Image (tube, rainbow over all chains, first blue to last red; front, side, top):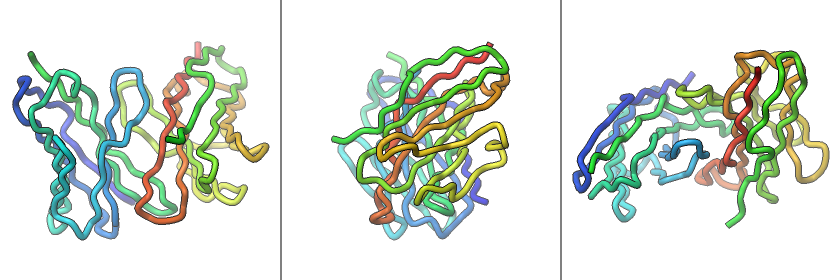
Length: 110
Length: 115
């Protein structure tokens, strides 16, 4: 089955860029997703990218996809303290279910 | 924007008791899911439900778990005899099924605490 891996922790200074990385194993996934989870809250869809794209930009968010290496990244420009959260990469498998990575905890220092 | 709603937001129960977690998916969605997140761990797939039956389930979803869509709007997860290790956040999700680019929409979750 699908396996999705992420680094567990990232700490950046406010105003810097953050880059959160994700690798996956199933190359047939057509869409790949990023979800954000704030403390004690649910899963908020941040953005997603279609597998025939290399890059997608949405305001401060940039998603890069390297399909050959099965590597997905999320870049947050001008990171703010409100961006502190856990970020999950998620890849579809089977009957439209999503397989989540372990999540990357982003800490933004003032 | 339509939302997936879950009730209650927090449920405390004693070990061995039955609990029912409730979800109202988005009204025109066809696929429904339950996921679980043990504190500090990854979000794990439990079960998917389509056309009034389970379409897929994980090995976590054993005989103690069941799902039901009792009417046209609710989707429930029942745990028959809760164990301490069932303590987790349970997320309901729904998907339209109309096109593969439509993401899963998640509810805010029910935090289940088994004492």
